[in-house]
Length: 276
Ligand SMILES: *[C@@H]1O[C@H](CO)[C@@H](O)[C@H](O)[C@H]1NC(C)=O
Ligand SMILES: *[C@@H]1O[C@H](CO)[C@@H](O)[C@H](O)[C@H]1NC(C)=O
Image (cartoon, rainbow, N blue to C red):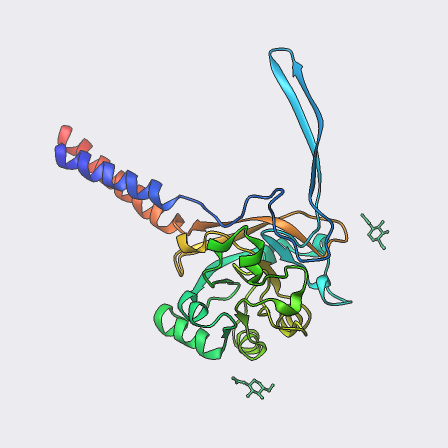
């Protein structure tokens, strides 16, 4: 009986632990970082009043699309690209792939991911699955929401002074030609590195391939390299070229949960058999 309880509780713990959802989103508010040139964030009170034994509260907010943890729809860079409300749901989820390039980015603030980065990752973790949401951990989360550190400049209004890592156009071409991914993103403000002026990686992803982009992703240190499903909780914004998102990852535990409940059932039957 004691052994049975031990196994039962271990099993339950495993089931619960595996179901923990990982939030990949920075809190959205006054400190949220915007690309220079965007209007400021505005949050205001519509009403706050007592209502019987409760109280009613409602606020209004105004925000630029491309701010905080957010996504780019193809229309952001492409005249024929899809807008937010036109994206099919299938595009907004997929197996999570986290590529850890913190070391390379620390050694070189202008580091750019190449084909080799993908090959090294695949050697360790296997082929990037179809429909993947590929997220780069550049180690930038720790700078949020310090604007000067995130853009890595003294002049946050001048993009030509920005320095942060990104994806090289060549590396991006390798990915899009050889793997079928749904989204590409990272914890920096752009998949093009800070010194880019042509934003070629944006164009390759959004225009040539209709792959959506995720920027200023949070909390990648808590994500395993594989074994999750990522969901892009995006506003279905009419005509939008992008929107802030609630990005999250769910460990792909359904298989193990099923295994776990089967084990529980087997144990229960075994136990019941002993009793009678
Ligand atoms: C990237 O591609 C360009 C041509 O588009 C080529 O000149 C360059 O050598 C390539 N770089 C790498 C690192 O493969
Ligand atoms: C979206 O664009 C269409 C076509 O130009 C227009 O009719 C519609 O009013 C726009 N919607 C919004 C919310 O701007």
